[in-house]
Amino acid sequence: MGLFDRVSRVIRSNLNAAVSAAEDPEKILDQAIIDMGEDLVQMRQAVAKAIASQKRVQQQYERAQAESNSWQQRAQLALQKGDENLAREALTRKKAQAETATALKAQLDAQAGQVDQLKKSLIGLESKIAEAKTKKDMLKARVSAAKANEQLQSTMGNLSTGSAMSAFERMEEKVLMMEAKSQAAAELAGADLESQFAALEAGGDVDDELAAMKAQLSGAAPGQGQLPAGQSPEAAPQDQAVDAELEALKTQLDQL
Image 1 (cartoon, rainbow, N blue to C red):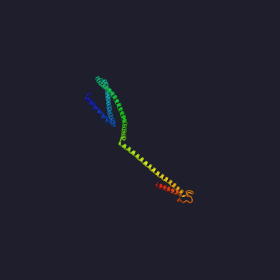
Image 2: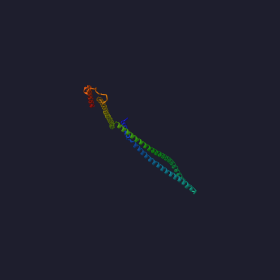
Image 3: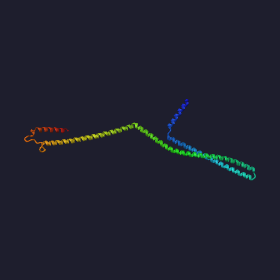
């Protein structure tokens, strides 16, 4: 393989690749319809010319046929008048026109077949163009859908790996963390409040118990806490111990 062939193949392959990359399906479809429309115009012009030519041949044939008939009548008239030479001349003219009419008739039949074929081709081309227009709209819609889907997939791909989506996910996680901290703080505040009320309730029980003890020791209850006869409170050592224990309890309660 020569160097020129190799270079030529490389150039053609690059050109083909460039053309393929530059092809826009929507534009190519529109241009194809335009080209087919131009072909349709040319086809109609060809059919019109064929029909016009057929009509001219038809007129020539009819005129030659009429001339042949006319010379036939003239030959009969000359023969009736006894002019045989004139009759022979008329028959000669009649024969020439008859031959012309025969040739024109053959040409006319051939043109009629061509015109019929051109008309069928024209109808077929019109049908193909109408079908192509319908397909073009469908293909363009599919192209638009494919482009939209490709753009959507590209956008989704960029979002899944891009900084914008990462930042969004980080902020979402941060909001969730803030909500969790707020909920935990509320729960802790509620627990502290409950503990304070529990301490107050416990303190009330101690106060009630202390009051009951005071009542017992002071003799508020009948038949309880009274000293024996002939003995003063100062003389009882156990009262001093009780008082000391009472003072200790008060001190503990004050420190709560």
